[in-house]
Length: 317
Image (cartoon, rainbow, N blue to C red; front, side, top):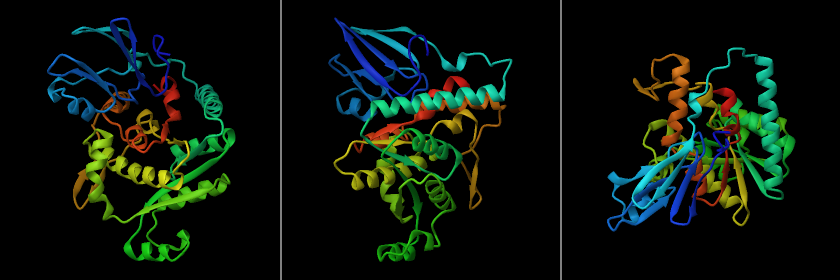
């Protein structure tokens, strides 16, 4: 907990008489913007463009900080409490075995809670083929019913034509290694598996929507948001009339600083600051405040995005 604010993903507004209270999760997973239009009317929204469309100048838009409660009355804004999750001290007696037990127990509790809260609802796990999403899939298989896995890959035009005439995915040469790994994970967990595919030429037409929905311009986040956009489109098309909870392995990369730079045709992308790991972790975690690459995208398609690793922030930090 964070001075009464629990870990998780949320942002909400509560009115009490003539006062408005805004609260936001300690990691800043969910967004909460506010500002005054030219008539002095207060506008609150999860998306920047909603404020702008309601007459709030871009230069006047403010954000509720992660892990804080703001009290807004008339034209004043007061910080009513909370705590910076990054301010907690490092455990001097760290034990890997004890840490592992705490993490496992927390995830068990998280998934039991999801099973109760969303009983009878369809769950879809976004599998990247990596460890993060595979861990989420394994806990989902253990605790939840009605779970389906989905993974994304680009295909070249020849493979897209072969797929259209019924060629099995495992016979398509241009499917990514990550996609093949995800297929293996789903098979090991005996989980139904869905393929989401696009031509690389689909990216250019999707960038405007990706940037708008993820509310970010950083190249890695736009890359992630574009893949999530394709996944969201296909999940909604496959389950058009169902309530769907989408489970992802997001956030672990920030906790363990698992990001690498990429070099393409001599140009470096996703540049990483050259600073010690403890400072780098703070840099990555605080950066979550400035992007909506998962929640913003999946919510736009009426899906319920869930990042179970949000409940582990205190352990890892």
